[in-house]
Length: 286
Image (tube, rainbow, N blue to C red; front, top):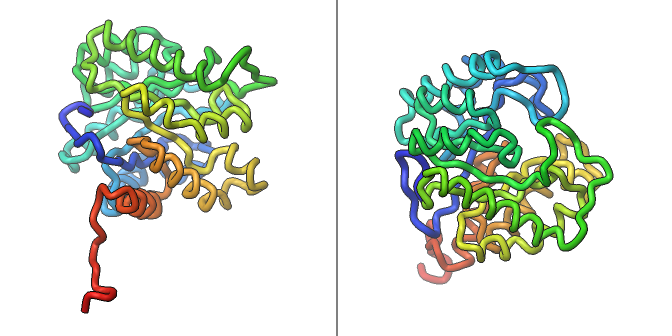
């Protein structure tokens, strides 16, 4: 897998830390809206072991309008600062707009994280022109920043998700994006109710079996809250349980709020799978 200027082994499990330059994000309620606060967050997650930062300038849920110019103003300058301060870090930007993609790639982004399933068909052309990676998600064709309402699938939801993301991935490759720079994401909760998201999660190995690296964005989402009947600030345990299952099933990238906890879960799963040795072994040996 190649993400911009960075390459990773086939069995690497990567932590993507969320950095919101929004005043109204559902999780942190604007704690990193100020650029300096966002930069402090970047420095912290790097120290905690993040491999990627995912910078977003527009919250996913409905809310105040953010036009292209405002989104660029929120994210492009931060991308440049992060690129200079942490050259070893993969810099991703969460956007569905081609104009924003152009600006952040010029500023040094390595990944365009399109959470809205190709709503702007020009985004793949931007990724190809700048030789950056793109994350191809499944949203069932819903409009950006809308919530699902009585969402249904005529057949198998997992088959629908796989068909959608593979179609997007192949469109990206046809546009000129390097095949090793395409990542697929079932987009938990996006265009789905909790039953759909749980089914996709328990059958995540079917996405992995397509051969494309799989990203999961699980962190504190509504499917966790509804499953356990927990508010946003009490969803960490459910998130980490889902992370462990997803890791066992073969997902490669984890978009999260809590970096150090996620890193420990992924390391434990990798060790259980025989892909990573224990950090130390003295029990029964000394």
